[in-house]
Length: 224
Ligand SMILES: [Zn+2]
Image 1 (cartoon, helix red, strand yellow):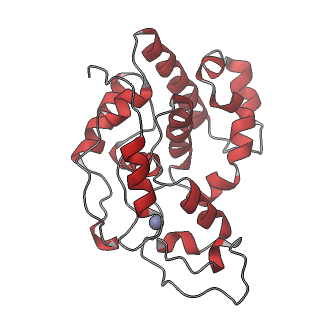
Image 2: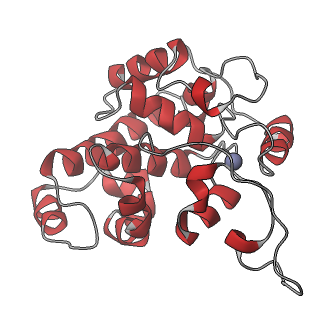
């Protein structure tokens, strides 16, 4: 998700008697990119930046970031259930068995982004993950091995597009057979996975992400 315009919304009181069920009117200050649509607001509040150590979730994230390349994240977000249906819920062992017939099926599926290179990249990613498991590695271990020191909240202008850690993660993934994951895409994935916390200063989700990071139990870090 490297296309988003960041900034912070103003905290403003919600309407009188408001139940709090509408994130765009609940009075919480949040990163500005999240205020443009309800889809983004819900995603921002519940997923983006929340640390995860689950390989299936991480594989889905890497594949969807690859599909996003050149498109808006909103396009991907709105097709996400279509992607999950088309890609076996992002169960790596199932995707790894996809053959030419499956690729043809996916190229005809309007529920996803029909781009042969990206589809083949997702299959390659799943195979790479299965091979990692066979070597005793985990995707979570690899991703979190590239976590930089936790830092103070940034302003919008200071949020980088890529970092030395994202360059290293990109290389480590490519070395294992992952595709469509350059340093900028890797950084966007690190933001989404909570490996870095780029909720801006004052965003109401920021502290919750830090607390979840403190509680996250990580698998052993692989050699890389
Ligand atoms: Zn935020």
